[in-house]
Image (cartoon, rainbow, N blue to C red):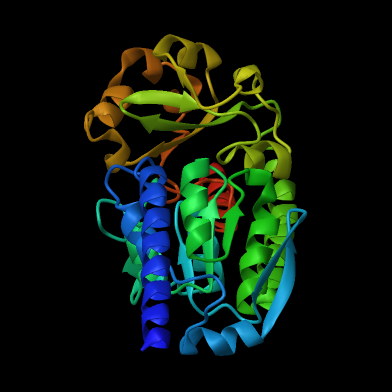
Length: 340
């Protein structure tokens, strides 16, 4: 009887201790996302030294990979990948035909261009609002997040599983593609895609160099009805200025980040070739802004519009610009449109 009472007291003490810890974590979690109950995730996560039967096989076969100077221990082949926040990883999954178990949605739906890889995926929330509870329920081998995540979001995701923050820097596109390839055993496919892009780039330079000599080529994005330009290392600009070797306009050189450019400044820039990205979802409050821009008499006087060299959405308007999918498809689009 004394042994039973002693055991019961120990169990009660353990329960009280765990409850106190849970209450403390709830306060931290509540600041992560107003729309998500991180506390539910907190209370659902098993102790780190316990392994479910499903996870036992995977954890027995692991490997260490290196990505952007940081090492991660992951399953030998990651079969259950969740992508949250990183459109770069979504585009890479499209290139490598990787099917995540959980992925980003827009207004609750997967964009049509990702249909081939998201047919059996579950929504884990919007781009900037991951649903921690859903991600936890998917039991991911690896979570691919973004380097844009705030520290509190990173903290919550790391409690769920192995988190790798995929770089949003356009110049890291090869490292990003190779990361997903190494996780899924598709290194040969990634190598093939990179080599194919480099081959097409050489041919494209030969085809366009003379035609675009001394020409001003610019890419802009329309958001909330306003025109935005980007630094030469952001958006599709690395393809235009680094890969194709085109001259960087002064206005692009001066841009420090995504910057609004007025109609007057845009007209002064006077691009000879213009690539415009316009998405309905990014212009919900200004649905007619593209037509307004195209019909603006000041803009109509610029070289690109006068000569018929203004092109709209040559690739999907929500494309990041930097990842492999964007590069492959934008390069083809530039050659096709400029060669007309």
